[in-house]
Image (cartoon, rainbow, N blue to C red; front, top):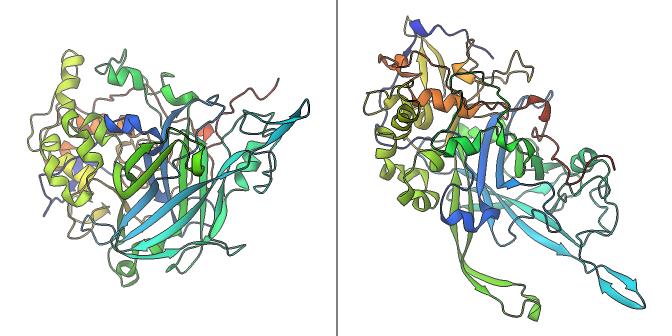
Length: 507
């Protein structure tokens, strides 16, 4: 759905907004000191959008990506997830910055010691597989180590709420298989077909209809000029073409938790009773509090380490790149362990953001830091949602729920229909496009959305005119020179494309 918004006629309703929370810009890879020690639970991106696959328009797709910067050739172990961790997606449908629904993924390893007859001795092989795999999900005879997972639906507090198990619609079982990573064509000849056989119809307790689930490796859809951004925004042509071929992650994979959920299941009674259709969402990962290294890894089947204690949150991601370029270094680990309801503790990082000043310095004044404090435009765009009105005061767009508590999470107005993935319908600049696209970021986030360019432009004042303030950069087309490669995306679930193989497609 494209809205032909006339910016000169718009006003922004900000009544009741809190002016003391935090905001964020871009995505989240290796963003905090501690998370670099535990890459398997490092959340990289979170997507939440109205599904646009034909026949699934009445659903919302949630995608949480973990384990960043995967080189496709990273064998022999590749990129299994942490079977001692829990990965969660949280939904707030009451605007109080607390989870109302949590989808919890819990993985487990399935192992078999495959051996070959070598001179009369049966010897364990060093590789993950000893022959071809797939395309059926159950074709695992040649696989030494694979993973399965369960999916729990929790209503209320994530640790003390009501827990119910999701089940496979076809088999009635509570366990789902995760495909192996894309080792290469000699091992998995048709990875797209193999992965598709790991997409499951799922019965979600408390939902009126079924959903779909997929957990596995995908081509990373996030586009960013990563090295230059972190080298003090060392961009050669920051006001040049948006696509300068500078996507650092063009050759990287990632692991996705993808879940398609009926819309009315997420909005709950609020929408069915004619209430607010706006939801908030974020993802977290938690690990056990204690870990002891086992000096004899094969003893008692305990493995290389023994973990125990309560689960403790170590990764958190809602709006993209909050912890990487907004939160101060001293608070990065604390942010990852925090919850949205407590975001006021990080207030200064958004009301007085450092990124615009840095951009002014590194561009030798070509970009000017907005002199508007506190930055209520950032609060609205990234934390509470926006309400846009025309010149007559009528609301023409909103993803701001009534009575909202400002907090870092994606906010999606589920009443706005999805746009077709055609390039002319899904604008990767969302509301900042020349013909604004209300179905894109910051109204949720789709795989195609160029959140880096959007966030950079908002940081330097692109939305200040909505608040009656002057944009000192007059809508400067600031860019990192990297855009999402649409050809790598799928038009249907799980939307992120087939991962890059670890070896060439032809010998």
